[in-house]
Image 1 (cartoon, rainbow, N blue to C red):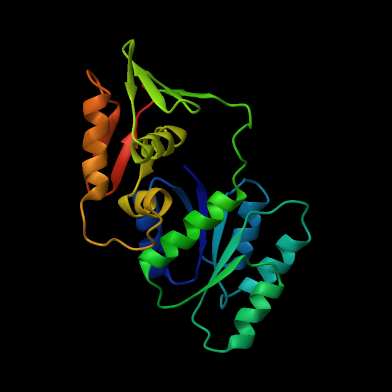
Image 2: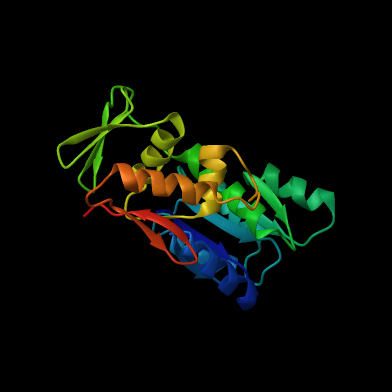
Length: 224
């Protein structure tokens, strides 16, 4: 689960993004202007910031400039309605990792968020062999899972899906996220491939598979 800050002076956009990100399992904080965002960033840590450019008190460029002066700061994706290319270039020059034009596609924005969260997350230890969560032990070298004392073999895709879910235990993983990270798809082709593979994992992780469906959101591997 990531902590994401949404900074925009339009309540409608903040509410929409907050609901969408929360459904994907993220913890969301809203700020109505740049100064409120900087105040909160000075007190709390965040994994990613979605930042509007045109705002009262302190605009997006001002926020980027202030963050640039700090030793550490989260990656910032700018959401801009500006049609002027120079405004987008200015945002990138001031430290934004990406610029998404308004109105934006929710699927595209989600894919960009996943990419930058993944890029800035620390890699797993090179010598790590096992993942353990929810009563399941996953051997990363042999690609086998052990549950209730029973060892089961996994296909390459089953292994990748289970490892992804276990690394994000207790966090909801959306179908879009799984399609992107496991199947390298930035869009939903309309198939039920994710559901099929989840059913296969549940069948192999009997008698008590810890993968649960979160209606309208995706899947969660519970570390119970």
